[in-house]
Image (cartoon, rainbow, N blue to C red; front, side, top):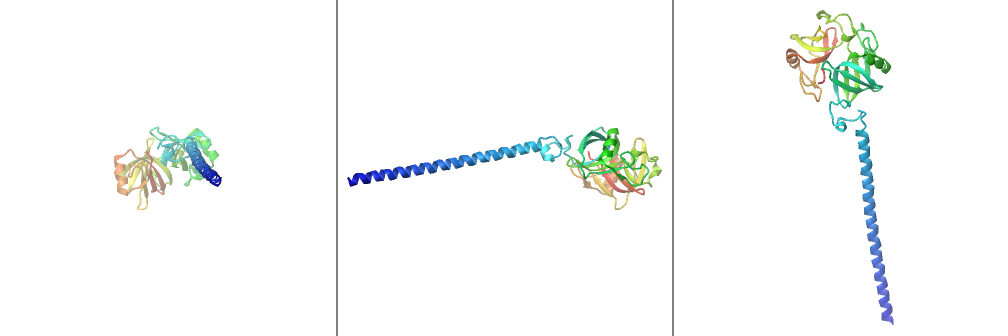
Amino acid sequence: MLRTHRRKSVLAAAALVATTMLLTACQGEDTEDGGKSNGATASDSAAKGKSDDGGSGTGTGSESQSGEKGSKSGMVSGKWVGTVSYLAPGKYTVTDANDAEQAFFTSEDTDIEGAGKICGDADGQAATPCTEEELEAAAKKGFEATVDVKDGVAVSIIEDHTDSGNGGNGMGEGEKSGLFSGTLGYMAPGKYSLSRDGNERAFFTATDTVINGAGWICGDAETVTPCTEKDLEAAAKKGSVAVAVQVEDGVAVTIDEEHN
């Protein structure tokens, strides 16, 4: 009788151990499955977030998200010289002399400077700060400007003095100050010209003139590169280089190659 009771006790204990092990194993599987499920949900959410950010088409993301450097989505950086036109509130295009169009956005920090068409006076020596409303009104008509873009957003929009009709563009107009654009030409050591619409403007360079290239004067189209006077002279002799030149009293302060 005692042996039978022990046997039943041993069997009951074994059954209890087996049940405990089974429950532990099931809980482990539930935990692993739950972890996998949660991980998949997080991945799905992250993927959705990336898709929402990168596929929105708003042009406010990075180049790596858009995957199309130089596309009209605006995911580009560089400097363009051309006609600014209106697309939508806060969105514009700049079209260069070769009819290549680049879209860009504006922000609250965009520096907008006029010289008679956006705002201000065409005869003024310095550009005038303008509002977004004035920019929009002028862009609906079209005006010439230099647009500096970073990651699809305009850092600055500087109206071209040449386009404002500030009284002749002849070779003797080098004493005036302002921002001018056109095709770079070589005249003599340290002396260059800007040609545009059949008119020419002469200007000089100095030892502290800042020269920035984007593939033609020097460097490449990917980044803005500081260039030397020799680089500038060689490019000017070859011709067909579009530049924007900030001039003070006939001397170039900066020469920026148009981004190509």
